[in-house]
Length: 266
Image (cartoon, rainbow, N blue to C red; front, side, top):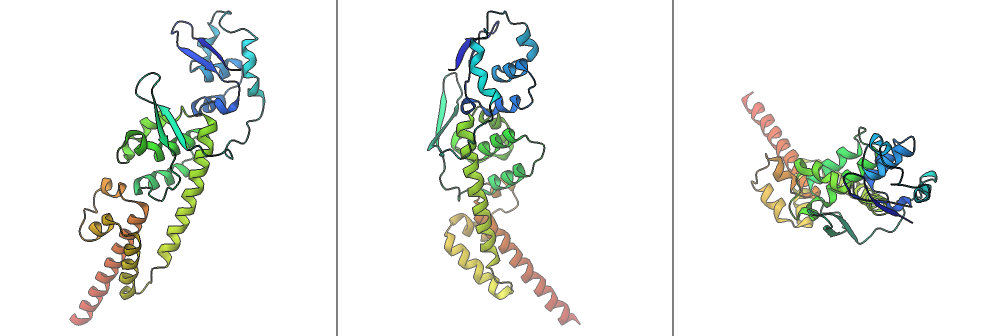
């Protein structure tokens, strides 16, 4: 069973887990680089191996360390666990938690979230556990802070998401990955349906806008500020795709107009 004790000097309470499911992303990330018992204890306690070597012998006995036997066993396949309906992360104060409903439909993913998620999936500098934490941060930032997505503020929230346990973090991120890929392919198919001839592109765009029936798209196409990234980052992925396609259509019309004008001059 898990073993709880207070760290020497700081008196901070630490609970050593006795199974992989209760290990946090931060602990798992540190454990992956460990080589001996000092490294493993340091990873689970959040201190340095050198600090542990100075502990009195009475802090941890061999019997109490038996809870760490799971570290010698392969990690179970946690990504296939059921996705929880609710997900909690540490809040602003001690013993305070912020509970959030896990999104079952991520079709409302903002453009900013989709851009950051695509960057995370191709960032080779991140470890697997850091990648999981960043994916959680991208999806849950608006729910945790109850505000619009802010790409510039996401890194601080990643540290909070590193406190998520593996039995919750891995199935949630696996679900998000699958949903993201499905929506990405769906949007790619939608854009391919738009006719290539200029006179038909406008009709195709009108049809897409009508299907989404989004005020933000209509406002944007009729003169919204399309030069500010924050504006883009608050739109949905689908809305931005429509705007990009609309701009492509406008550019093509301008190009054809210039061609006609040049012919008239000749």
